[in-house]
Image (cartoon, rainbow, N blue to C red; front, side, top):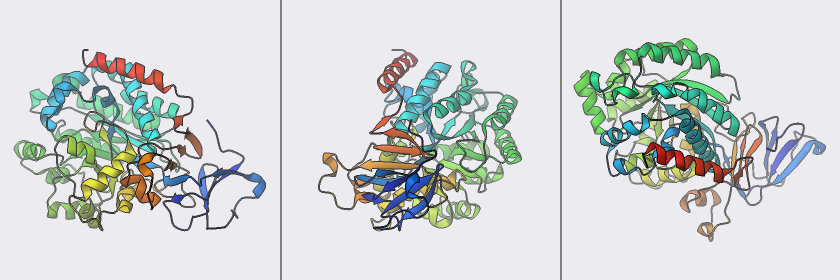
Length: 454
């Protein structure tokens, strides 16, 4: 991989850039953005003899996109016949028995493919929610960290959990749940092993009980206590479907937001996946607490779950980020396409002049960074980490387009030409340096077929 070390880099005169006052480009040094260059100007922060130049005249430059909710393992069960054309609960019931057969090799290969897909779509930071730990796969999070480090993506690994199986009135089969003390002990181990809270961190850990219908109230409370003891964030699925609301009412006698508050999760160190079925009063409470919401538009459409009230949540005070969700309910891991989906589905709820392309970009950059509790990524500005996604408009779909930033979404961009993480190129000319993608796809597909019994 190309590394920016002694030399600084001037990404010069981009076709367009998602920042103000940087028509002449940006300067990167030691993994950070150090200068925005005005139109017709040259860098002033770095001597000319220390500058390398990247001519970005054919590129649209975005902050690296940030994915705040995913399930890497689900790349092995895309378009899986038993789960087709089903809403969330029947979909889960169909897939849980397959996922219970996951092996370490499957987990490693699925994670590698998902990360590769994300990088190729302009994603530089990903949060993955892994909550399945069958006996053969107790080290799933360690495997994810290893794969992320190999490919050079920033990761927030969330130690998920399920403890409420069918025998206790939950949805998951017993073979997929764990003892709660085992969950808490492993959560503490992972925080100590991998969580780096420093600026520019490449690996962070969050605790993420799966959902109200798969963990106990005690585990929700204990996870919050452990997370706050170690200064890490909390994540879970919430208010994704009406079935979940009915489950919470029947099981706990409360709506999901009331349940969230009851277990000590109504706080600004929490971000939720989906967050669709909130009423006005609940949106106000979530916003006042600063709870983050990860919008997952494609998954919500595939599973007929509903449309999140993104702009109202933002206006109330919630950080709103973006996630591709699992590759069995999306069924992909392409983040720039997800930004387009957020724009389009948002216009079914809001007017076009409110749900703009800038709003959709904001979800995938600044909003996602806030969900993950990070102030060092998500914007192109001096002092920020040099995480960038560069796209070309050289395909037929873009011919005749005017505004380059709008064209990326409206015309359907799907692949970045170059991607940089912490000042290092991870994608060049549309390919991940050093990765044999053909071999990875062959291995991955074979494992997917084996998991599905084919």
